[in-house]
Length: 253
Image (tube, rainbow, N blue to C red; front, side, top):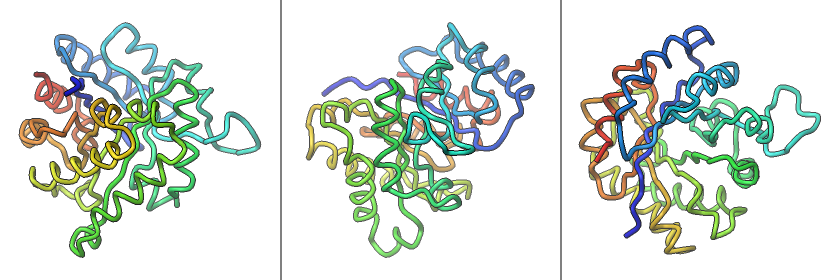
């Protein structure tokens, strides 16, 4: 089996001004400086990107954006392109978060363009997938995941699949305080890996699949110990450098 380095990514959502972000990064860096064999990322608002890239340069903390447009340039007022992010030395982009899908109408069709565009610019996409509470309760979890993985990655060549990070985020567990049981998380993430394996066994062995949804320091060790879980996409708990660093520590082998 391929060795997969865990990734702990903190999604700040629409929090932290530049000055608040600077205070945060100065508190976080010493807390994670000794973490080994685990990748650390913060996914920050566009206005914080340059400051965070500069402040984190030379450290183990990578900086990700929270969205990107599929075109490299054009008449798309208010949008940011992948080449713009790449020039800033941003490492990657969160794509398809449930909040983007539900609140802003982001579709699988749009993501099928965004994921290849992100890869082409040398950025790492974190593709978010997951089911609603209604879909979970009606037994539609696998159907939903199959559709999202199939459509969102349709434009990615098999040899590029391993470069896509996938975050399984059950929508019913995001910001609710609820968390999938270890059995539910492992089952869903193993199913996602099987979908990738159907296209490329090599990519399935190398691709990192994260869990997201009310991850906190107290439940992180159990979730991160699951065989198919390669890290976490952390929401609210990532806004505090102490709690986020404790989750990073839980991912270290």
